[in-house]
Image 1 (cartoon, one colour):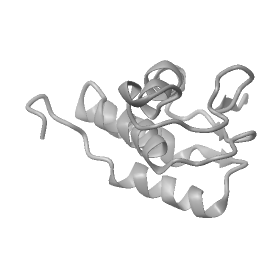
Image 2 (cartoon, one colour):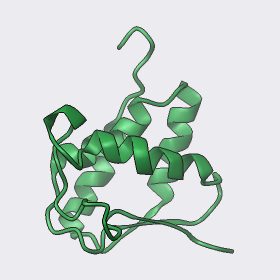
Image 3 (cartoon, helix red, strand yellow):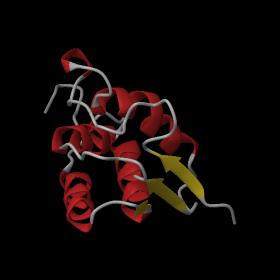
Length: 121
C-alpha cells in the first residue's frame, strides 16, 4: 500500500520559516497553507490510508501557523462529520522530521480543535 505524503517545505513553497496565522498578516500563513495545501491533501486522502506529514527543511515552528493550519482544518470543515474525519486523518498521520516538543504541541492543537458551526460557535 502506498503511503501518502505531504511535505510542508517543498521547494519554492516558502514554508521553511512558517508565517503568521492569517493571510492578511503576511505571506506563508497558516490559513494559506491550510486552504491551498493541507485541506486539499486531506480531501484526497482515504480514511484508512497511511499518511505522512513531513516537516523536513522547516527551520522555524510557529504556534499560530500550526494551530491555524491543523486546528483550522477541523474548525473550518463543512460539517461536524467532516471535521471528525479530518481529525482522525490527522491523528493517525505520522509526523516526520519534527522536534518532539513541537510534535506534542501539534497533537494538542489537533485534539483541542472544535468544529465551528454556521452561527460561529
